[in-house]
Image 1 (cartoon, helix red, strand yellow):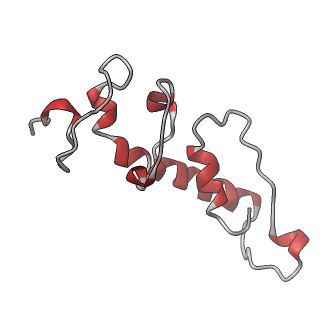
Image 2 (image 1 turned 30 degrees about the vertical axis):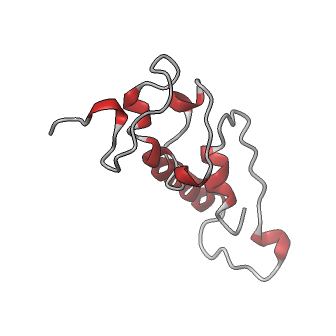
Length: 105
């Protein structure tokens, strides 16, 4: 395995940002952070290294919902069906987006 130059992750798009703002190693992982990165996702300098990768955020969201609502989550009563989750440390929204994609939250 040899990494491609300039943050190219195999799609031919090189890192358009200055290296001191977005290091190549983060640019190359952009689709691991957000699968829909090319649909308009923008991150600031700190967000590149602090956002939770999408796969991990999805796993965390599913595990927390399972712990809160074990068993059948399709209860007929809407007050039993839903829950509210507050991400007090939300930065770029990786975990918040994953929670929002779960219909019982």
